[in-house]
Amino acid sequence: MRDRLLAAEKVKAIDWRDDALYLLDQRVLPFEETWHAYTTAAGVAEAIRSMVVRGAPAIGIAAAYGIALAARERFAKGGDWAGALVQDFEVLANSRPTAVNLFWALNRMRDRLARIKNNESPLAVLEAEAVAIHLSDREANLTMAQLGADLIRKHQGNLQTVLTHCNTGALATGGFGTALGVIRAAHLEGMIERVYADETRPWLQGSRLTAWELANEGIPVTVNADSAAAHLMKTKGITWVIVGADRITANGDVANKIGTYQLAVAAMHHGVRFMVVAPSSTIDMALASGDDIPIEERESRELLELGGKRVGADVDAFNPVFDVTPADLIDAIVTEKGIVERPDTAKMALLMCRKRLH
Image (tube, rainbow, N blue to C red; front, side):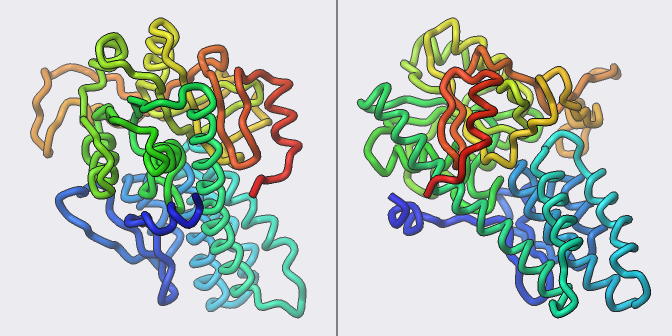
């Protein structure tokens, strides 16, 4: 399966070359494929904040490279360059509040900085750590893709019609994708008849990004309005809802793109299985439950404007970016360390004690 997934890879959103971080601008896809080069931590932070790069794993990877860039800039100025990096860590940490992969990656870079030895080149060490974070995510995606496909086969081995939300593919990760990686693997094994992709308001990650990725790989995909999801479950034979995550707490509650919670409620009512796919870096064991997760809210104009032109009434708008799906609505959480079915606190703790599967 690994070789088949590698052969099918067509999309990437992050590229590290020529001492710069290149990010594919996901705000203008699928109509334009525009790459931007970044050489400072502040630039990377703004790319994260403005959603040039998005998706929890991709945000973490970009932040790691941002620290590598900052170290080069600080080192060139001399003095206490490592101490000055504290400002860059803070700038990147403040770029998005909900996706825990961001803080996981920054902590890993901070830990590696603290362990640099006198005989090591600090800039080379930090660059290598960022590259390792990037490659590790790709490897995790490959493992999760196989585990998720095996789970689909275990429960319902015939042709599947699945529903997904937001974008969880190569664009949102270091490569291949989380939920979309599972869908890719299941399609390669002949188990996917059709994918329904929620358009995912207000940024339309489903209709712009997910549909684009799937169509490029010849996977049958149909875009639907978010509000049509329950109707699809009732009338189109949906067997699985497969989504990603931005943060998972110690009890298995999942924060993901706004609209995920209502999908889980509808799936429970219609007897549709609900799968969350995310690397273990998304699991925040410091938070007991989803009640503790900070939920980002963005500007109202994202809801009230289209192409910069106001289309809504002159009123306020409520624009939370994420919601929390309780663990008791989730059939399985798939990570590179293994699968947790019907997650709870004990099962999540056991998962985090495991080593990564290969």
